[in-house]
Amino acid sequence: MELEFYRARVDELRVDSSSLLDANHLLTDQLAVCHKRIETVVDLENDLQKYKQQLSSAAEVLYWICDLCNVVYSPLLL
Image (cartoon, rainbow, N blue to C red; front, side, top):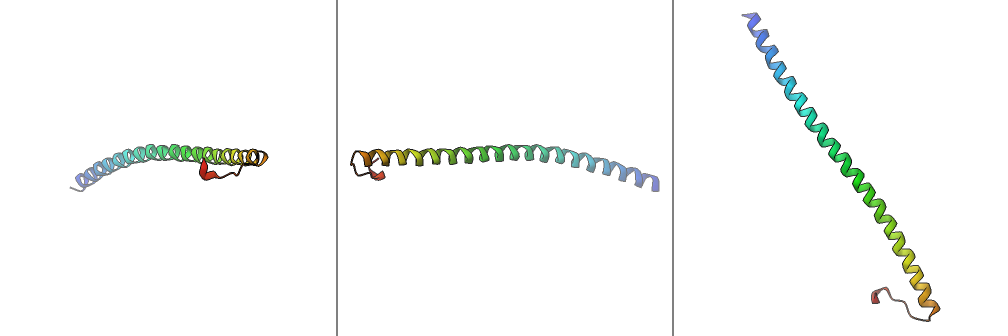
């Protein structure tokens, strides 16, 4: 009787262990996907910052050119 209880308990623990391993693999895969998304977001943020700087530089050049030509520069006219 006691032996049957322990056998059943060992079987339950094996099933639980298998379920936990499956969950662990699933969560590990999901974590890898999240890390990849974070890397993509960081890359996109860096690109955005670079483009903002380029736009600012282009606006400065345009302002400088307009000043040389005695033209009033207004960003709203672009």
